[in-house]
Image (cartoon, rainbow, N blue to C red):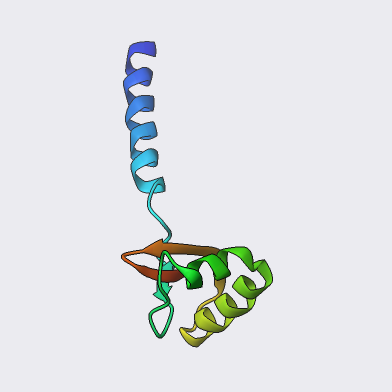
Length: 84
């Protein structure tokens, strides 16, 4: 019985790891309009202003019909906000 349970447990753990690693289906990264530069002054300003992150993130995500997820990133030379 024990020889059967260990491989089954290993398969289940691998399946959960594969399905659990990706972001949720409702997650969307939205780029800042007017092409905020990253890295650069725009990115530095956003990273240093936590209150501004919340306000701008809520506005950008709200415009897309989503909620601000509390994260920003610099990707492909642009600034993006995470929305759910």
